[in-house]
Image (cartoon, rainbow, N blue to C red; front, side, top):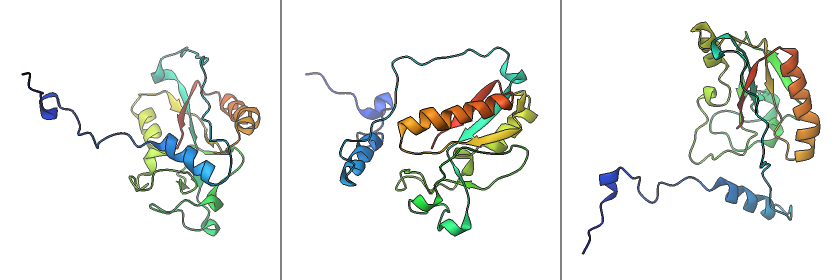
Length: 182
């Protein structure tokens, strides 16, 4: 009889340590809200890719986030806040990359059971990007960062928001964008 090796022997995680099935949970959530058809994530069989034309250490990098500017009148938006649709934004926005900004993620449908949303670098790593520029890892940070709305309309995202975002990134003469979707 063959003996089964233990999980420890191979360094396997225990069976209960599995990814959170967020796609299934969100589809079920939308159906429960009465949307009928389940939410469908946009994904493509072919994705255009443009290789970098210069080394990263010489490139201007733009930061794109789905985090929202903090608005005190919109209710609780702090770490651990429940989902807060009042904090959502509906148009692309931009801010000065040389300044610090208070952006938050209470308007995003994140897994609040398994995260605290205390580390703003996870959704808005502008200080880390500036540090990377100072160390020579990247050439420089683009003059502005950009916020991308998290509207649920694929049509609006593709035909309005994405076009505006690309226009702004090009206007800033960025060579590449670091997209931090939450």
